Image (tube, rainbow, N blue to C red; front, side):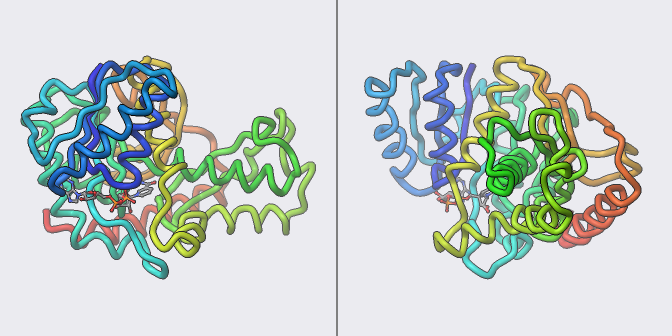
Length: 308
Ligand SMILES: NC(=O)c1ccc[n+]([C@@H]2O[C@H](COP(=O)([O-])OP(=O)(O)OC[C@H]3O[C@@H](n4cnc5c(N)ncnc54)[C@H](O)[C@@H]3O)[C@@H](O)[C@H]2O)c1
């Protein structure tokens, strides 16, 4: 199993590290445009191998796509991250050009690749990848909801004063501060609805804290976060590589599902060796449907900024 990660920055390198630690891929290629940067990150990571006990071979290359040939899975993290006070949507001008050319170069070397798009604004970058390259729709996946759901579970556990392993919950919708739809009514603690433990007011606070999870970290760190994003990407890569048939909310191209068309947005999907093997149309309340459709309008507005 060969995995390429484009962008050896904070998220790309964190993702490579988690993939290696889990030791399910034979090879990880890190590619960056900055001379020597991916090579350096790869060497540093390889020097963890004997300490952390993995055999995954990590190599780094400067913008040489021939080294990515035959990749089974490729992750796109190249582009700029946001700074404090910025929205993800403000990154579109620079990142659209990068994501388009990177996706084209990857597919030219690996025509059967499964692509995971991470660069922001992620739902729009995933849609752009669908438009730019000729891959079946199940093979282009946007990562956002897996991270947002992990942040939701963190906030739920905090409110419940419970261990995170007791908590389950999911965030669908657009990967943006206003577009996320944390499904509080579906969230559980050991199969008991969290609404049995938390007041409506506290649950609303959990929801709001989840939606600004990325912005909160960007303010603290001065740039966007990388540990949880890297872990979330590595979980998607593992689900595909190991054919786990796991359910994650991912940005998928919708053609009528949830009453939505011609956009990529976060919905529950089953991930396996074919990428998105199924979009799971869970039952939503009227309020949740309205939130998802409002979120979709926001994503479509950002998609409208693309020069397709
Ligand atoms: N979808 C999500 O949940 C999520 C989470 C966190 C970050 N992000 C996004 O991921 C992206 C990367 O974030 P980061 O913190 O790793 O940024 P970073 O600046 O640390 O790393 C980005 C890397 O991309 C490289 N790069 C730029 N143009 C390139 C090109 N044409 N080809 C190859 N490499 C190129 C840069 O040299 C840099 O090393 C940002 O757009 C950020 O907003 C998304």
